[in-house]
Image 1 (spheres, helix red, strand yellow):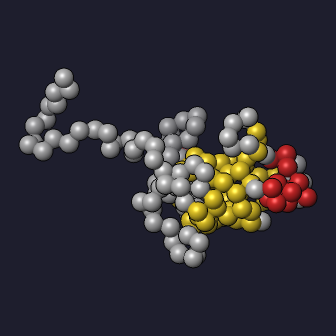
Image 2 (cartoon, rainbow, N blue to C red):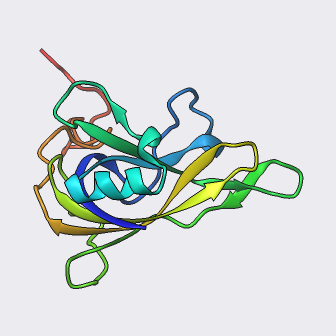
Image 3 (cartoon, rainbow, N blue to C red):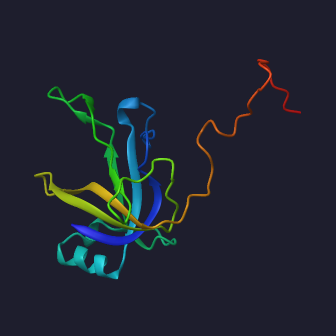
Length: 160
């Protein structure tokens, strides 16, 4: 199913990030929240997926959370098989530049599949994201970018 809407908290480029409950590298993932437009909300309703939406009363309104683990289960139920990253493209179907980070409010199309787990639970598997109108990410830097750079080779840093 392909829906148009608004992206929030996109962590779908480059290396996966730590999971929410653990720092175990095997639990790393890519994730994003997505607020479908009105037509998308109707399609979700028609397909019995409206219950998958969340609403926390913030600017996201009704939204879906997509996650993809960085490692899939092997035959022994261990997370050892590297997963493919989420495919991200631009409006011309060209690969998205990994260094161009996606900010909240960007307009996108998402392509996802529904997976019936057999226990009555249906999960949503994000296949690809097409960024239509980019709002550049202007938030914090990567974990290491705020650290100072010592240009003269000294090992200590005076932060006073």
